[in-house]
Length: 168
Image 1 (spheres, rainbow, N blue to C red):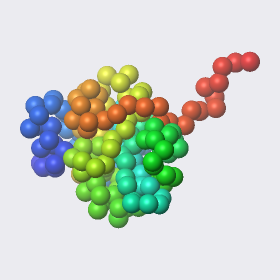
Image 2 (cartoon, rainbow, N blue to C red):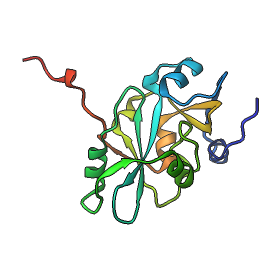
Image 3 (tube, helix red, strand yellow):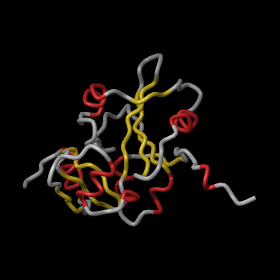
């Protein structure tokens, strides 16, 4: 199988090493992608396009590891007071703004006006997995290369689980 996506082209143009992980069938969830790629979901990067609910219709790409839940309020807090309430973009908006089908979104090759924010936990990974931009393949690469190419900012943007509280 040959894959020619804008994400792969970007990696190759920047001499970024990666490993192509083809799927047997299209995948649209973290669980399905991890199973097809033979990796743990904690190495997966979920790329979630959020939109501002009012105003000029701005977008932000928020990325968390596969076992984490995104906290849109934490993203808004990080962006600052001039951003209003955020909600999840629709499949149509994802395609129109990011150029990807829902479920095959990568945090690369986005319009300049779309900021990219990664949860800070990504730096603790040895490797991460992202979509290739095609639902039939994923890519494994170094998180530092991904952060650099995405021009990403790092922040705490996940919902802290209640079972992470210290014992009383």
